[in-house]
Image (cartoon, rainbow, N blue to C red; front, side, top):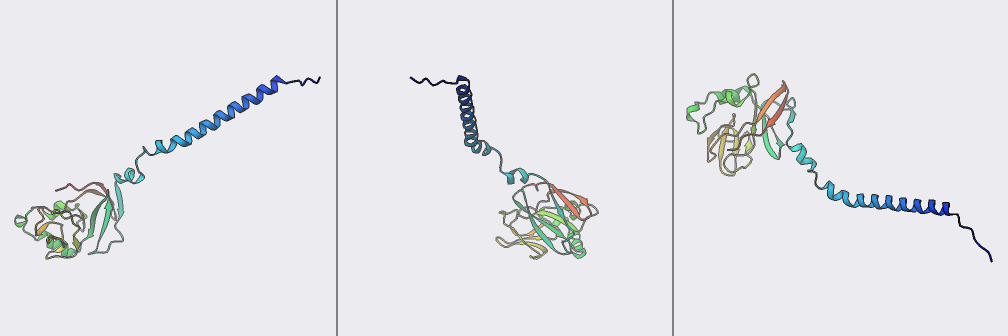
Length: 184
């Protein structure tokens, strides 16, 4: 009769290794299964950056031109006004306006040529067309609201001026918008 000798030390080491390897594989598999559920709880990247202030370089906007930007999911106009547009806005008798506000209150001192406003008509939220209308500012084609070169309502159903957001000049050619325009 042949008796095989069993090395119990080697048998234990092999069993310990298999036990540890199985446990490690189960831990990795469990983590891989749970990770998508945990990661979906994090906010979307576009949501995280949506509330952050935005900086804009103004040097590429020619005199008399305007651009439309999106910030926090809403459009804003940035207009480089000409001297004639500034004069036209300042020559208006404020008492005749539906929403009386001077041009000086709507722009930053020392940077009067730059006008930054929300780009939604205060009537029903349409986006007005620039350099249009009876007053050279904006025209809302949907319902006929006319805004002047200071973004003030002059004609049509809009009840208030185009709102001005909170912003400041970082340099002569750069602005930072830090707060949304108040809603009407």
